[in-house]
Length: 596
Image 1 (tube, helix red, strand yellow):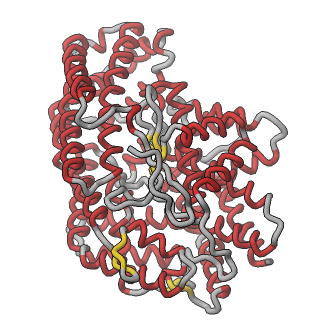
Image 2 (spheres, rainbow, N blue to C red; image 1 turned 45 degrees about the vertical axis):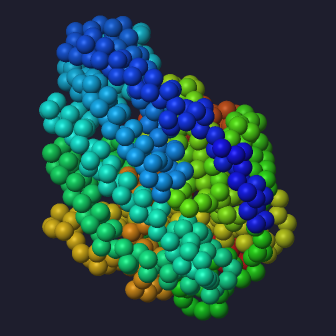
Image 3 (cartoon, rainbow, N blue to C red; image 1 turned 90 degrees about the horizontal axis):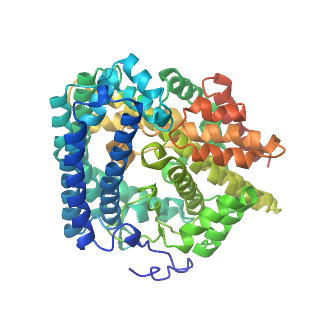
């Protein structure tokens, strides 16, 4: 693989990741060897421990957990590599077959160890408490606690094994269909056939006619494929309803809340606080932006348009890297040094290319290797903020993995999004401090407000859409038009009367990957943004030691709940005032724009 893609216009050479730290190639002997090693280890593990966990003392259970972790890390390494190769080109048939084969192989091997968590959860409380009391179990106690939280929703062993093995032909297969369909779609704009990432990028272009053409063409392509997306969505939502019913989860969101280790009332407080703030946040800002554009309403394709006086220039990759690392460095030299490693060692894949997964993500892989970042970098200020966001994830994943190990490195989505959004906030604040020109400051503030509205208001609107969608689906299959109506209602409520929509926009729900891959993921973004706003306020008032406490929070990974992690900063997410404080920062920035 080349060190960098061909230089993009005005962007410089963009890095392409080197996945060799995981495996040299997808057809090399290393993968075959690891598969066979994992299969043999899984067989030995099952022979040694199946049916024995309740009879082990604490030291014996700790030994079993260490063996389970090592085996799970080997399987995760295989699957991480397959996932990243696939994300790099979803349109390549050979890569798709490799990805599917790896999914099936890893599923078959992990079925041999499925008994472990099922049996662990059946251990009586008095017995597990004795086992946890042993000093050897101190490290593993948080993981055991979180695994046993699902105890009331666990099915019988045969049902669990069936669900596990059928995953590759069920939800995972529908996910693959969605990914490959989106990767192959082409959006005709200005005489070119664009990927979805390229077309949506044009909605941030300064040329109004180009934005409108891109928006209409994207909507038409979604409309032309809406029957497929409707079938896919109906099937996945019904599939979730069936499993939730069997597991006795009371509401569609309940499984996600449990996985995020959040109480239902904390999520309800967040959603209520954001929804009640729609008028003073999104409605107010878009009314203001419409006036900047010379009217009382704003077409939806102008929602993320640059301000009329915004400079029209591309930010090169080198400038983006230096901007983010400089901001990180002013907060913490250690954080900047970790971030620099991602650039120096080719852990980032930045260019847009046909077949590549759209959007952006940070994949933690496994602690014995390191995370990788995927971007679709196109030189906008928003792309710089996306780099800051994903690098925040990467730093978090590296710190947690190195401190906690494979099983305990996994962090709930809400706290994972805190690290990423904090990286964005550091970058924004550094940019605004260095800008003395009033017009350019207004552009920076407006851009940040729009990012925050996209992170908080838009994601809660997505959550509302999902909630209504899942509730309505329980009454029967939904026509694509019905899904579009639910979508449009949630968008109008959240964005306000200053936004103008047309019939094509009713199909925009179809491209959101979170609805397909991770139901009810989206509120984690709003949680993270509001938490970061409160956290940054503490940072501004802190004299010394904040950065050290912050990095310790990241190193904790999944070993602590949100209450424990936030206590050193004097924050409590169960307090309604916590959310009001976070939302207040967005309102304050809009106040500044109204005065400018």
